[in-house]
Image (cartoon, rainbow, N blue to C red; front, side, top):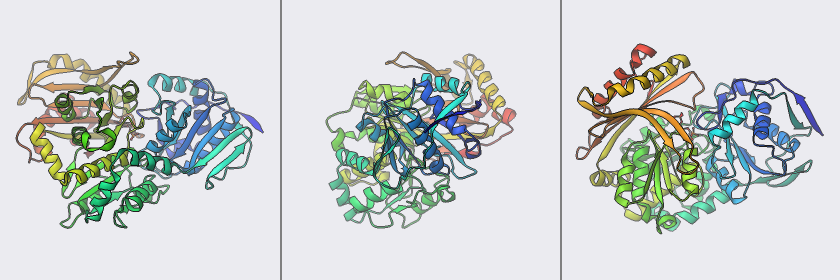
Length: 539
Ligand code: G16
């Protein structure tokens, strides 16, 4: 029943910020998925006798890839595979199921917030038994193996029926098809004050949650409408579709514009939120009001005592270097631990495992806590609803109160997409070389306090990671440059801009950041090198 199939290596199977991510047209090439999964199993020393969790966000090729992976797992001697019903599981739910079952690893078939469909993207995230994505050391070993693989093993059997909850067998391997929503809902009920949120909805609070035709639809329907009693129709685009119904499932002001327009209309809902393809990202909106992800992390941290699951105290908080400094001020005020890590959720995991932090978040619309080892979109929405229910304040009031207390970090991210990879690499290398010469210099109206690469020394495993370049100014403003690790089309240069204001809270971010934006463009010679005078996407 077990076949060994000869294959030739692909040379491009390197993982990025979060797993491997490619155009669908690339992953559907013969043996592409087979090579990658076999290489992964080989690189981690085999999976014989192990238990894994498997599922995906339902995008194009999810159904085919999952059957291949089931058969490769059985052929490699895996003991048990826990699979989401119909092959679906959100990234946060997968982390929960993995931890609850003490599984050895997990695979989520997703390219996260990237578009899906035949012309979109596909990907695989790999989590280790800690519930979080594997370290760079492991992904490097997997990449090395993909370049030398000559054969893979696959079980010769019919496809498994994944619609049926229960246990089946493939050879000696047990396949348990589960409803991952159940565990996830229980976990949320254990953290938040569902009774208070129910009351809020009963009082007529208007809510809009957009699942972007992706994996969180069934979770959101169950939690918000069925359990918490939000009016029918509050949850939109709740049926996961292979091409996300044409939506780009990235919950931001641009790709969720339909929701933003509704929130900014006169009779718009009191609270709006959206999630991404695999359910780990979130966007938070009030009526005619947008909360930046950086502020959201800081506000959740500042209000942790209102949440039953955290009221006894939190360890500390962490953010990625590119995220605004808002949460740093909160950590100081609360006198809790504070850490700054490279972009990539995996860098938070050691801090959570060692009880250094409870909360963490990133500018890229990700927030989470140590309840799992992934960011968690629905968790963030419930956290906000719980704060609103406990305080009786609107999203805007809560945010304004926060600014009054701590000042406001005006923040924007510019993305320059589809740049030739060699051009982008050279831009970053030349900029890094130039940084020391900027120290102490006056640029426009700003004086440079410090300009240097961001280097993170992990306090737990001692590893060192360099990611991004930061120019800090004496007034607290910052520019961060880095290349994205999740794109599939050339290189994307991300430029993160921040300006700190103690009293002036009502300006347009673009206006407040004009000065630093101009410096950012000039210092890195972005127009000259890329031919772009403006960012392709501003969030
Ligand atoms: C992944 C990581 C995040 C990271 C984001 C953006 O998110 O899990 O930690 O912030 O990519 O990465 P980049 O700036 O390199 O494109 P997701 O939601 O795509 O899995």
